[in-house]
Amino acid sequence: MAEGMVRMPTAYIVLGMHKSGTTLVSQLLHFSGIEMVSSSDERTYDQGNHYERAFTNEINKELLSCGRAQSLDVVRPLKPGARSHDLVRKVSAEVDRLNAAGQDWGFKDPRTCLTYDFWREAIPHHKLIFVIRDVGEIYGRYLKKKSLGVFRGIKALHAWHTYNIHALAGYNAARDEDRIVVDYTSLMGDGPDFSRLSRFVGRDLEDMRVKELQRSALVKPKRMQMEVFLYKLVSGNDVFDLNGKLASLAGESRSGAGADSVGNG
Image (tube, rainbow, N blue to C red; front, side, top):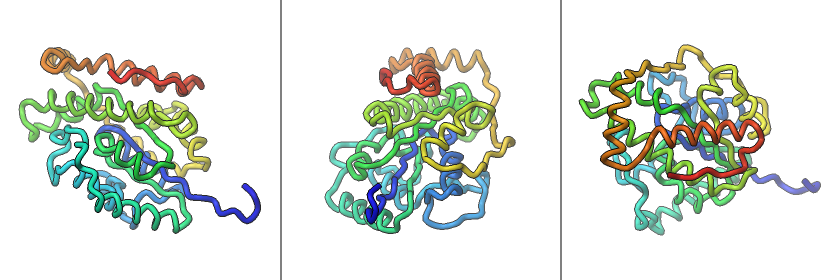
């Protein structure tokens, strides 16, 4: 950078399905000097602290007209008419304010998978972090929540497929140097994704990982296989196929071949 030039802050957008590890990534970035939330919050994940920026959270809810709907019920992507001029001006003003502060910043909200086209236009210069997690673990987490009803397994599969197919489209549209895919299992374990993420953001990461929070819920194989089959029969969507593509994408990224895009469907 030439002497006297002011460095423009970098904005980071984190994409990923609910319970995929986006909160952990946001926490890692925030405690490493990238402002991911606008105020300090001492609560833990279990106490409701998901490291989500209130402003972008509210914009996503407005874009999707979803209010306080349960996460598994928010599966419809952004409608073309949702981008009102007032909303665009409101977001532009907030982005200008954040950039003027001079600090790298970002945000995460799983719903951004569905609204990413809006944010890509609103923040043309940003870096993308796509967090993935095996569909079996996501399914298992939601299967334990009996309050979500008898069809919670099917709903979890549909949400997982919908969020990841849209996030993958966003990832494929980004430039190689502006994107990274991070696998939750590797990030939490002994894999290389913690150090890869550190290199991507260009700084040492404060290690906020807590092994006890890696809750890889046990899956009931027979029920899952049956519901995957039924979901594919009804929707035509193959979650196992997409799960394999995402795993391959992560592997290619670690080997240095991650510049190649993979199919969305």
